[in-house]
Length: 91
Image (cartoon, rainbow, N blue to C red):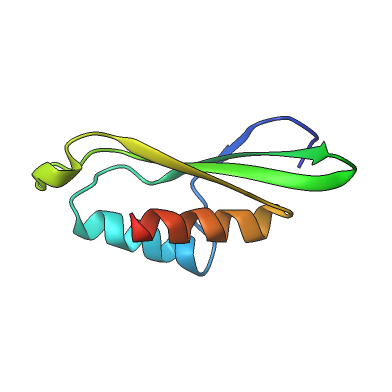
């Protein structure tokens, strides 16, 4: 990942929590894939990665009537998209 450049992905071929999050959103009648947007950067001499996952609204569940997102930061992209997917699942 290039320093400071935001990269978008659906993480469709990623095993683990991103795949579980996608399956969960489908069961909740959320039509669009969760979209992951992330960037790598350096903070105080340490490499960091920040990822946000965007979830659209559900057509059938009024509790999910608005689109929402959650963000987390870790050290590597692979760890970070797993963490943000877990965070979204808890939501």
